[in-house]
Image (cartoon, rainbow, N blue to C red; front, side):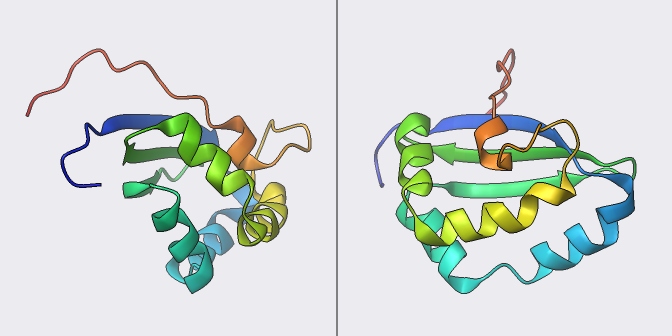
Length: 111
């Protein structure tokens, strides 16, 4: 979306210590249709950072985060991906990881 104001979004999740290696492997080979769905939904400059203790930091840019989340929620490929990812995370109480993406409040940014 050229010219549109992009919102920076950052979130945290916790990957189970016993699943770290497999989580890294899965993200080294994200399904092409999942990548296409993220792009079509407006997720830009999307990155995941994983610390050795399982802390996962996600970052993305999008014009409308609620709309980008809704587009992914309506995607069949996302439903399949999220179902496979649930066992990798701590403290989700059975919810899909994408349902736990609560943006952190940005307090500083340097262009």
